Image (cartoon, rainbow, N blue to C red; front, side, top):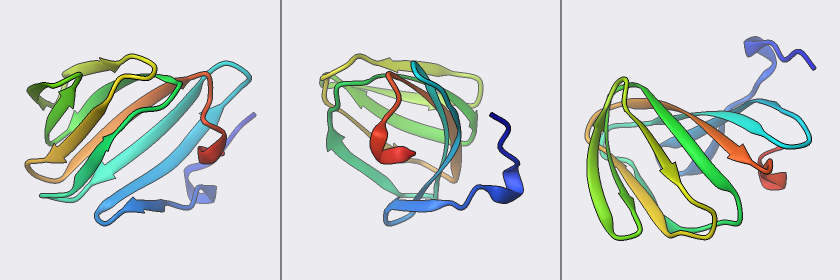
Length: 106
């Protein structure tokens, strides 16, 4: 599967948070998430393991009740079924990988 950036429409997940599904297979999915300054991803959990990498910006990430301030070059893991949330201290871009792929992001 080859997906061109120009073919991927961004989807607003919550106000100020946009996702672009970059690629997925049977076992893994890669998603680019852009958060505007001050945007919040509310606390949630899902049955997918989520690994992320901060490409640019600054993100306050809470996983299992522990809050960490992440900057470009930092990464994180939100285990399956563990509550997590995020808030962008400034405009932030992250790359998330989900395993297995999220059906709702295809």
